[in-house]
Structures are given as structure tokens and as C-alpha cells.
Image (tube, rainbow, N blue to C red; front, side):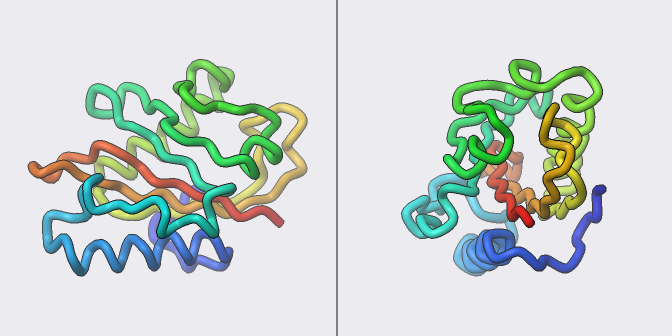
Amino acid sequence: MLEDQGVLTGTACKALYAYWQSLKVISGPSGPEWSDVNLMSLYKIAPQLVVKDVINDGEAFLNRYWGTRITEAFGVDATGLCEADYLKDQAKKKVQKFLQYTISEQRYVKTSGMAKFFPTREHLSFEAVYIPIFDLNMKPTQILLTFDFD
């Protein structure tokens, strides 16, 4: 379920959101840039973190980093892959919708529900937050994403 800027309840989601807010303070109105991001500041949530590169204004999203907890939860190591490489048609469309919404709205997006987009993981409930990162022209170039699982 897409909740747009809903209340975050998960520990990793709250941590990523707080980090993004701290970056917004130093980066100003243009939003945080990739050069502002220090992944070592996120080491506590690294197993639950995904870093995506925005390809061709959102035609695709390449997983630059895919945390080990994400691999355990979803049963796939998608590092270096795009959604089309590891998701089926409907699931791919749904995930891309969340990602494209994040870059079009240029703000954080919360999702939650059951992990129906991964076969055999439909029983797994989650909360996720998608965070846009920008270039000098305020164009989203990366998305930081984290999951909390029940």
C-alpha cells in the first residue's frame, strides 16, 4: 500500500528518515545530493538498506547496494540488478510505480503491507520508506530505501 508521507513506525525507516532530514538541513532547498550522503552514517541499518540509481529519468532503477537482511527476507540478492531482472510483470510494475512516484514528487514515500511482489514471501509483512537524492539541478539521481519486517 502506498501511503505517501505516512507515520513511520519501524526502527530502520525512522533512522533513514531522520538521516534524510539531517541532510536536508545542510543541503538547503535543493535537497540532499549524493555527495552529501555518507553511507557509514547508516551502518546500523545497512543490512536493511537498498541504494538505487535512477536510470533515464525513472525508466529503470539499478540496485547499487542491496543489504543482507533484504536478501534474507526476499530470497534474492539483487545487487547490480534492475527490477525487470528479478520481479515478474505485475510486481515489477507495482515497485516501479513507488519508485517513480518518489522521484516525481521529490519527497519521501512510505509503503507497507505484505511482500506479495516476491513469490513465496507473501506472508512477510513490511514497512518501507523511499528517500530521493538529487543532483545539482534538483533532479533525482538515487533513491535510498529501507525495510522493516514484522
